[in-house]
Image 1 (cartoon, rainbow, N blue to C red):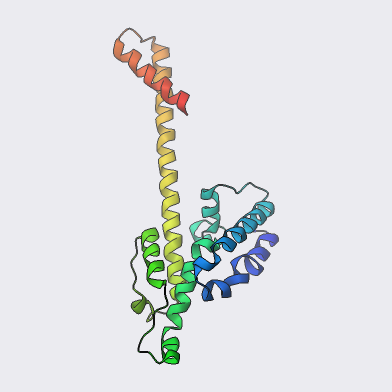
Image 2 (image 1 turned 90 degrees about the vertical axis):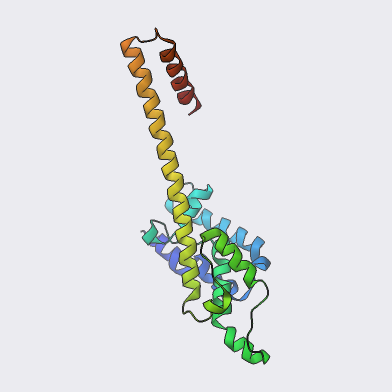
Length: 199
């Protein structure tokens, strides 16, 4: 990791607006966060001197280093984690200030439903309010989900590549043996040609 990347991660990135992520409902910040992420993705591309335009590339870069990422969080992805974490941390204090037995901010249940859809992990706000480091817990679950999705895509691409190699080997075998007499061999070669042409 070079000096520019260290400075970027330590002094810039989402750290500069973490207080906004924790205190504002994500829906209010959505447009601004998309522009923020785009700006910082361009900075990462400039630092690394590589293109970083695809969704998968941005997803990979957003992962922590321990997940083979660059630790450059996408604020539009983690905004809900930060907000729910802050709400859970201050739940009892806000309830006391309002003179209520319990308190759940509007929209938190919907954010937790979206989190479950993205990660497959279900939470309820009352239980989260008893757990330390809720924001970090939700972050980690989102990162694991992104990592799993990327691995599945890589595995699928690898399988396609193996099919292409198998088709090429079949063509070479047919051409080497001169085996085109039977209709089954001609069909096999046509299929192989179609696969190679497509990719």
